[in-house]
Amino acid sequence: MGDPINVIGGGLAGVEAAWQAAELGASVRLYEMRPVVQTPAHRTDQLAEIVCSNSLKTDEPGSAPYLLKEELRRGGSLVLDVAEKTRVPAGAALSVDRIKFAEMITERIEDHPNIEIVREEVRTFDWSADTPVRMDAASASSPNAIDHDQAAEKRGLADKRGSAPTIIATGPLTSDALTAEIMKFTGDDQLYFYDAIAPIIAADSIDMSIAFKAARYDKGGDDYINCPMDREQYEIFIDAVLNAKSVPLKRFEDTHWFESCLPIEEIARRGPETLRFGPMKPKGLRHPKTGEEPYACVQLRQENLMADAFGMVGFQNHLRYGEQERVLRLIPGLENAEFLQFGQIHRNTFINSPKILNESLETRSNPQLFFAGQITGVEGYVESVATGWIAGKNAVRTLRGQPLITAPQTSAIGALCRYVSNVETKNFQPVNITFGLLEPLPPELRKKYRRKRERHMVQVERALEDWDTFMAGSEKAA
Ligand SMILES: Cc1cc2nc3c(=O)[nH]c(=O)nc-3n(C[C@H](O)[C@H](O)[C@H](O)COP(=O)(O)OP(=O)(O)OC[C@H]3O[C@@H](n4cnc5c(N)ncnc54)[C@H](O)[C@@H]3O)c2cc1C
Image 1 (spheres, helix red, strand yellow):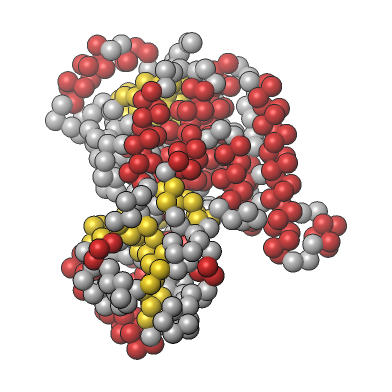
Image 2: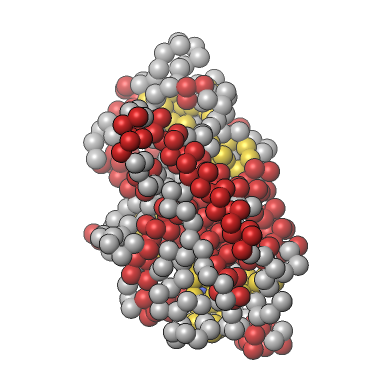
């Protein structure tokens, strides 16, 4: 089968890259540092562990997140297949039981005859142009560093490493040693922002005589638990959020947040009504007792198939744990809430991809070296999977001396790859997939379809048609 492709990082992008390469018949070595070295957000040793919300966003046809998922489904994505098999009720969204999801992906990767999993932290790699990427993996931060290196020698890993393409998919929480190494490669051109995690609450601690089950505009029946607030309760809550103590951040004065994942205290600081137009919006919800829309509402989404844990939707925050207990228990229905996980904050690192990557996700200075996942500056679980999908396929093509593929310009995956590799981009910032990134319709179609919803529907249809043609073509060429 030839030299193995190295995939560094067994997160969402890494498992997809490894799977796609292995399914094309290549031999893959997947390096994952957990459990030898942990990240600040992961809790388990499973591959593809989801660290925050269990939602892979809306799956409503006609939306950009649906299009991205549909392209991956049609492209034989491992992650989307497992997501479908482990989905939990969540209205129009595709949400998963995070434990079962990670377990099933780990099992599928472990069982794949072409994939070897190596549980080591990769700390260095040699990126000299036009030579195969040489890597050095060690678990030096673990007490067993020497044992691990010796074990690697014994398994012949040290010799074999590096004679084939390498995909770096180590995510927003890339280990410090590798981050330093990547910074050397990118010329210190690395960026960051802060991202936060939302709390999870034990279902049996929610007072269902106050909270009620419903989904917005009845999409998905009873999938969410809703905690309604009247005006007075809302004002007291906002006041408490604004006066609660946060966990101090290093270099707080430099802090930049990811705008679509702001902590609730940041949102509240932007104005007393802002939360009511954000994660606490009552739109589309009717209180079953009064038949009226509440003044504000906190939603909780089912976390697992057992339905014994619910995540607070959009309630990421970085308040001190004691303050979270005090403030969040002011929410009607959560007076006795038991917190299975508190909100947290993490630094989220990415490279300045427009200066470094081509659209097929290999680096400009070394075609054997690829980046995939959140580290490329895409934001979100499915966006990370999508870049892993492209990088995995292209690593095999590099190995076989075939021309690399780029996704169709009209597709969601094409749009993401174009965004991260576009040299024209100024002030590069991570993005989720939106219609703003997709190629606009030609003027005659824009004239014909005046309503935004119609135009989006046509964009989705066009993208999927192009995607099917692309898939048929790339299967023939593989
Ligand atoms: C705190 C936080 C909350 C987030 N919340 C959401 C959310 O709610 N919704 C959403 O869509 N996105 C969210 N994201 C963003 C992003 O979608 C996820 O981080 C996603 O998991 C990125 O996928 P990835 O494969 O790039 O990285 P990851 O899934 O993080 O995978 C990277 C893997 O690489 C491993 N690794 C790191 N360094 C090394 C090394 N040197 N050697 C070997 N292995 C290594 C890690 O252990 C990890 O398993 C969040 C990110 C953060 C940091």
